[in-house]
Amino acid sequence: MSTTISKTVSYLAGGDTTPDWRYSNLLKQYAATQGNLHQLSWRNALLVTLQYPAATHIKSKDSWTRSGAVAQSDEHRIWIWEPIYDTACPRCGNTPAYHDKPHVDCEYHERGSPEHWRTDVVGTRPAPYFDVAQVAGGTLEADDIQSPLEGIGGKALKEICCEMASEDGYKLNTVDRHDLQDSLGQLRRSAMTLQPIIDVAAVGVPSEALSAVKYHLLADYVTSGDSYGYTNEDETIAAWAAFAVGSCIGYDESHFSPKATFPVPLGDTPQSVEESLQAISETTDSYVKRLQQHARRRKRNIL
Image (cartoon, rainbow, N blue to C red):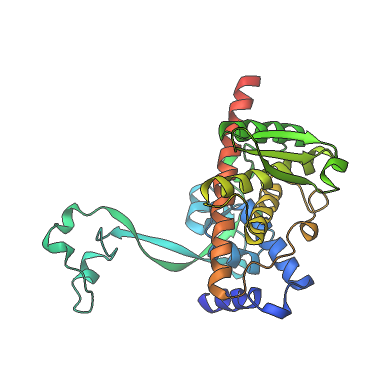
């Protein structure tokens, strides 16, 4: 599993050999998987992409069994890294037994007793998981087959994006595409407050909503950084995260074409690619969770 991840990351950092159609197709699949399984780390999302890219909700065999469902075949299991929880040293993160080994250079136990250490992730192990499409029988929980964003329309999504932008101190405008020189959106600063203003082109509500996601993320990069602009790498990460959010809701590339929005590769070294994949993963998870909170609130208000 580690070798598979390393080879894939090295391919994505292939320099002159990327981006090509295989590179673009792999990233589309990865972004779609990350959107559908936004809670997964980038490593596990990449593993699922390479094994079962159509996955929408995965659980361990035992978890499905507790729901009364049965995995159809062990031959089609999806291997991911599962966290191991145990008592962990607050400083080095090792378990008490491993912490006492001679080669572990940590003396925190001299100032703290292991019985007072908290439980944390101390490692990972390979574990077989199954997608909801690979199980049969039982009564599936609502979260297994539907999310708060299931079936949400582009207009509702855009309104939620506007609310979220307002919460963060940004203004979201819809403008004519001609005013943006045929771009889908832009980010500019208010001359008075220096806060970012997000303009999205009026070209169809789903596209407008996903453009709002992309430029909202870029606005966050601008306000949290030291510069008044954003880099091509920032725009690439924001665009892939927006594509992942769209995949989570059910908008495919016909609504938001990646080819036109992120021509810049994720990085030219394995480390930079890993950092970009991690940023996409964390950004997607955070944004989807916020969208879900707003979707639940809207539903409560309607009902």
